Amino acid sequence: MENKTKFNNISKTGFWAPLFSVLFYLAFDIAAILNMSGILASQFWISILYYTPSIFLALSFVVMMVSIHHYAPPDSKIYSHIGVTLASIYATINCFIYIIQVLIIAPTIVGVLIWPPLFYISASVGIIYPLAAVLIAVLFRRNSARLYSFCPPDHPT
Image 1 (cartoon, rainbow, N blue to C red):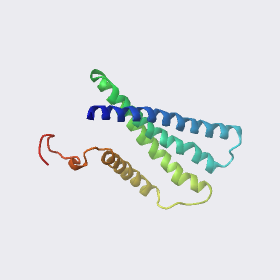
Image 2: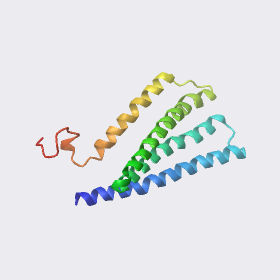
Image 3: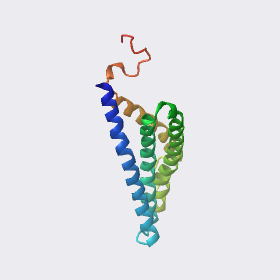
Image 4: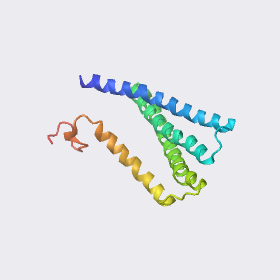
């Protein structure tokens, strides 16, 4: 029964992650079309509408790659693991650059300087993602009593 639940969770995640990737990509394309057609004239809104979907596109792409990794046959898992690693590198660089663009550069275009400066933004990015990873792992863990115990599975905790 537990294996069926695990497969069902992977199936749901494997369905929704690519769908969100496509939606965020389309949002980016719509922003590009609005910009190129001249409908969107404000540099501030161009920056926000371009980069915000890109941030979420990178994150949903990593989730999609993890789903692919779980579906891969055992002899192919090395390749899907490499794909997950490369997707993680892409998401890290993408999010770092675009969060700076959205939180620092876009507001300064309209004359608003948002505090904290670049150093604090970069430090918060380095803290937010690991905390989000732990939070997701904790929230979706079925047996919260053995929360990441380093004991073997048969060890009484």
